[in-house]
Length: 211
Image 1 (spheres, rainbow, N blue to C red):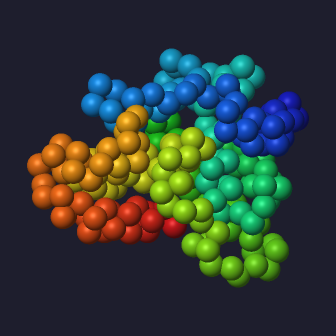
Image 2 (image 1 turned 45 degrees about the horizontal axis):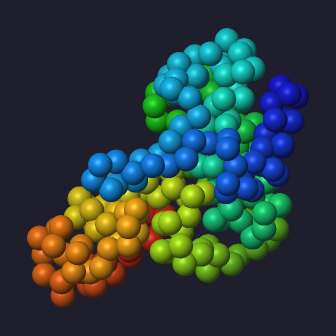
């Protein structure tokens, strides 16, 4: 297990801290201009988890590489410093190693990692006896949506939004070209005057999901 701890420590302080790292494949846009998330390999989570459980160190490294940005983005959002986020990252890696045999559905791993990371971040905050509201620690929501480090986190949260909100946020913030309200309204088939109020409601829902 020592090699895994060292691997996680190296990732948390180096790779995860660098949004431009090559550790995760770049995101891309499909033909409709909607964001898709790249991955570090073509293996499914199920295959990777199965290999990890046989003691395959390469599979462990690949699994950490695949989800390092997701873990670190959640940790950094809920932590007061990059050092705390790095500590959370390592604790999540350790818990992943210890509890992976208990995971019933490997395809639910992203959601499980988010839950574990939030709990570990809360534990770090509690250890510092810090009671600052987490919302005050958030960056501007629009910047968070566009942030490479938060792509996976935002995409996961957006799955729980109404379809119209997902479409609107994709067109306003994740489209490869900057679209005007009139262009967005035309694509959605709604009045231009409705874009602003709908945007506010959708961002409020997304903020609640990310908090």
